[in-house]
Length: 268
Image 1: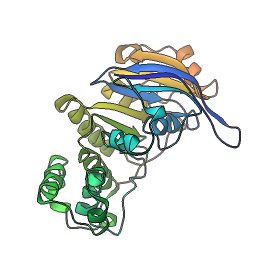
Image 2 (image 1 turned 45 degrees about the vertical axis):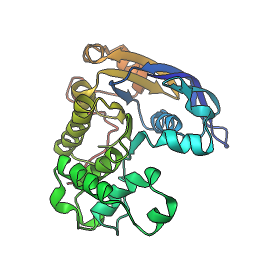
Image 3 (image 1 turned 90 degrees about the vertical axis):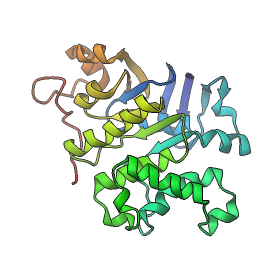
């Protein structure tokens, strides 16, 4: 169980990115966080795995407050939290296999990781992860030779190498076209259903939210303005929609299955 309590993040310039955010995520959920750019989605995910430090509040995961962990305790806990980034965060000049193996850095002695020495078991695990993501034949290629969709699959395979209990996906399909977006989310859904990995994923597109989420929270200006199930969001009213996205937001295509007008385009 992830239990976020009164989480607040104020940046050094005074920007309040999160304000008194509280919610719970039972193990095995596929939680989607929705809201416009700047609403606090990325800050929330990065606070959970401590890429950034919260200003106030608790992040309780299986009874341990992640917000208070430091040093070795934080590194050991973070190994079980995979991260998938919007812009892939791959070493573009390195091979696909090397990028996937980097997911084992938390389990590998530092001197071995510096010289790229991974065990035979880790290399086998990496090939298995690539096969599971449908790109086993791309292992020897440089990461920058792959399409955007393939690069994101490498990112998911890298996260899988951590043997995670939870994966945080920060707008993982924002730079992909609709077909590729569904492909990536289907892989995350498979990990959620088959491996019982908790998924927390931020998204812009409500048709994707309806298709993949089990629960939803909506952020606006750093505050939670909506919480509900997949069924709840399918029944969302115009007033609830505007509570999340603001009065200036509109629906595209006349229904909740459309994109936000402020959504991003894709790449092949």
